[in-house]
Length: 218
Ligand code: E4P
Image (cartoon, rainbow, N blue to C red; front, side, top):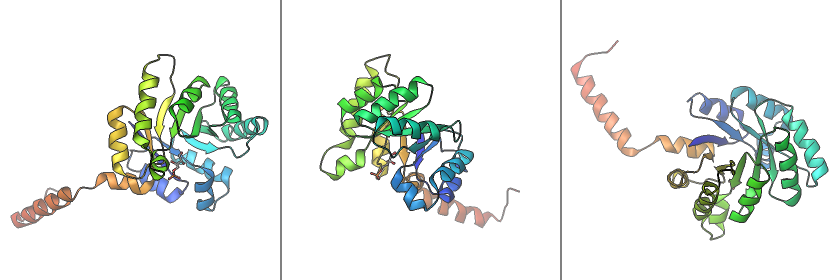
């Protein structure tokens, strides 16, 4: 499973990219607003830090303007992945951009039917929002399972399932068990994955015993 990070915060991106575990980055207009930076500059800087796909979202809602925005975003760097919302105009834009070789991430997916349409429109990634479905009392992970099953049933559907709106490590583990290709994690959730109290306790005990030997490796 590939790990993207879901943030426009360059300090977090640099810090986590240094682990070697970050395969890409996703942003959205809310995350860009939170970063306080200028959109095009922020995307350019992220693309310089992370060589994998960096999602940059269009903000127009009509196909013609979305396409112009998408083409402009795609010119920022080779690894820009244009993000479009799952609307009729968004999917028309997805088709046009992907036909020209631009990577497209279709966002705001909340049903398996929508995911099927995005795949037919040539999306590189489909982003089902698990956390937001859980928030309204639906089962976000069930949607991941449905989409993985549908995509696996057809060799010609090459769209990758990008689990989005992740809230906690269980979303990652369960999605990985289902075979989802990618998850985009808020920095705090990626950091959570490293930790286990028994690791901390075990390491403290090993180091205490080692100190008693008076030895050093170097
Ligand atoms: C995905 O690309 C979105 O940026 C993101 O995962 C949305 O998550 P949220 O529901 O926590 O805002």
